[in-house]
Length: 310
Image (cartoon, rainbow, N blue to C red):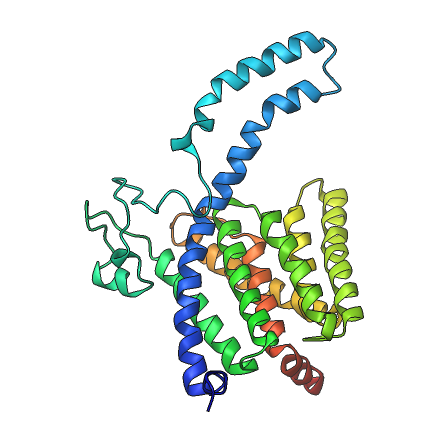
């Protein structure tokens, strides 16, 4: 028996996928924490160029002078110690700045051994971190169990990992970064070149229909109520879901996301009536993530059950 044959055995593949996915989940925590800050930094550093290139500014010399003043005020952001990316600097405690060691960075296990506290200052570590790792681990393991050691299994795990990151980022910041939604959409189209999940034609139509469906709802809502019900990131995330599951599953995705949204809306209303903090707001990204994963793995059984009930 070769190593590849051994890895194809469920009793070896699934635990291995779980452990590997836990490590991916640890990296997802880094992405969730740093990517929005990297986007903010890029936006701030782009302000001087935007001032210089603004067509509304008549006095170009004055615009350049203001842009230079802004650059000088933002110069500290360009210093090496202020640089931030997904691999540097090393993860640190938000409270005391203690650098997380390798032994303190073991997915799930370190959190349990540290009892959810920083080893240096005793500050609480948010439960979000082990939860993201656990979700990524379970998602990767289930993908391996469902599709085996295959391109479909890796693609399904990738879909889950990205939707976890997108859901948490959207819930925390209200943004769905193009850095994740667009690569996820292209990944879905590339995976379906060989009809991994659906025929390529269905995937392409799914990506277009996913974007245009929420785009239409957005503009209809805005024209009727003069308010924005969602952001453009939701359109792109729905396009990514459509690229994976195809256009036939999009009605189910939108229906499920609405049901999930209604469920959390009721929870929020009940919490408000009990006098709890009502300022907390759920975003649409997590609903799309839950609905997209459900459609990916259980879409066809759900549709058959629904049609049978009808």
